[in-house]
Length: 328
Image 1 (cartoon, rainbow, N blue to C red):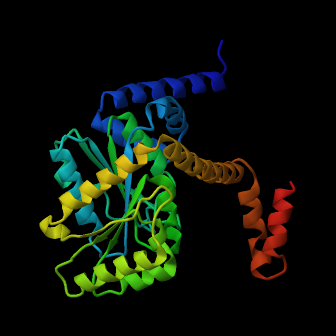
Image 2: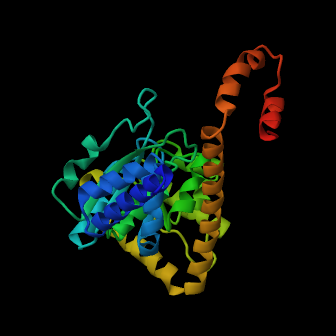
């Protein structure tokens, strides 16, 4: 007779395989369920990721980042519609700030899903940042693997905002699109933050506003002075756009396609680039898993509750507490 643990493990495996089969058929409900399982770090979600991993690796991930109010969401949805018109299957992962009350995404799917309703080749999911300092959810890459397993070949990842911590998006995507707008000093801010180095493609949105031409010249000059080329010769293009009127979207996609062709043009360069990103992702995944499982599977939480008053009263050093906890 099977033990309770064996039966539970068998049930988890069965549910994961059923969900993987439904993903392979592209069922929208299965996609939503699978992402939820992964985002909540459930046993079924972890088993599912193991099952679908062999079917991943072929999608093109485009990260879209930029300051709040730069029109990222409008741009992403415009690009997605253009890609759909071209017959591409497009998945969008939009990272939203976390609600302090529910822990979920504040904007939510109900706002973003209107344009995707009824289109089997277009899936949009809002994900909560849940305290991630890099502008993306901790489960974003795993969610993108779910979309790959469901047959999506372009995955657009829209981040919360832009800042020094936003560099995390580089590890998740093949191409980083940095959105800037005139009249806000964005160019100066991103230069100070070091964000320009992560961009494979610059988009000046709301280009019809005063200062658009000047911002374009400043970016071009900065790249020229700094010899802004990737190993292998890629120089990030600067594309003007007015996403609200869908102006410049074809040009953006053309440049993104050029970047994809450039990546695929040198298999060794592509292999090395993806291997470096995979190593970084494995380190992040290992750190996250170790911390979560150690915290969840031990008496540390109760011990912290007991000692918190002493720490707050400065009777016990928090650094000593951590050292003592790790030595258990």
